[in-house]
Picture (cartoon, helix red, strand yellow):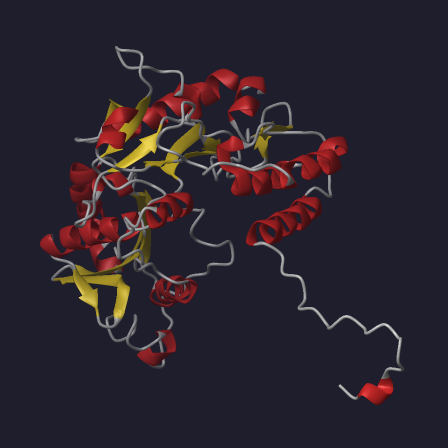
Length: 401
C-alpha cells in the first residue's frame, strides 16, 4: 500500500475481511422459512405444514397451527435443534399421513355434496366419515400383511439387524364411479400405507447402506397411449381396460435386504406381548420404495411372455399377440393395462389374458370400452383406410399391426 495515501497519525483502515459464511444449518433454516412463509399464504395451511414435516419429520413439537401462529412458529423452529429425524433408539415412533386429494364433489339424489379427504390421522378422527376412513386404514394394513413374509415384529428385530425403520406415509382417496359421478359401490373410501421412499433413501445413505438397485420402470408415454387410441379409431378395434390390484407387493425383491416400516399412525398404539413397540417387516416390494415399480415390471413381463405375448420392437411398454382369429396390442402403465383388439377376434384374446392374470394376481376387473379411458371425442371410422402405417408411428403400432 502507498504510504503517501495515509498521513502520519491517521488510523490505518482495517484490511478487508472475507464475506461471512453462513452455516449449512442456518442456510437450511432460512430456505425452510422462506418456503414455509410462501406456502402459508392462502386459505389452507396444508402445504405449510407439509413443508414443516419435510424439515423436521415427526420431531415437530406442534404438528399443526393456525395462520396467526405462522410467524411465531417460524422463529421457534429456526432456533430448534433437532436430533436425527429417525433414530433407531427413539421411544416414540410416529408416521406421516398425506392425502392424495382435498375436496371431492359427489353426486347424490339430493344434489352435489362435497367430501373432504383428511390430510392426517388427526383429521381422520375429526372427519364426519371417521368410521369409513378408519376401516379403510385397517383394510390397507390387512392388504400388506396378507402377502407371505410380511408380518408385525417388535422394533428390536430391526435394531438387532442394524436396519433402518422406514417412515410410513398413508395416502387416502375417495373413489368415484366415472359413469355416475357417485361414490363407488365398493371401497369408496380407500387408504394405502406406503414407505416414504425419499426419507428411507436418506436414512440408508446416512448409514452407508444404500444400494444401486434399479428404480426405473417402463410405462406407456402419453404419445403411445394416443397412438393406440388413434389406431383403434382408425381401424375400428375393440378396447378393454384392466387394473392389477395391489401390484407392487406381488413382485419379488431383486437382491436387496428386507425393509422395516413403521406402523401406520392409526395403529401406532399396538404392542407386542411384552409391551414393546411394533413395526412391519416387509419381504415383498412395497409402495413408495424406489425399486418396487421395476420389480413389479419384471414380474408382469415374465408372466406376459409365459402366456404367449411378445414385446414390440423398440417399445418396452407395448406388447403384441397374433393368432388365427385376430390380433391384439397391449400397453402397460405400471399396474394399468389397456388392450386394443381386432374386430375379428372381438375381446377373446384380451379377456383370456385378463382371466389368466386374475388367477395369478386377483381380479383385474376387465372393462370393455371404458368411459374413463376413451375420450368423449373418440370417433370410430370403420372403413377408413390408413395411407401408411407410418401415420401411426411406424415401429410402435403400424409396423406391429
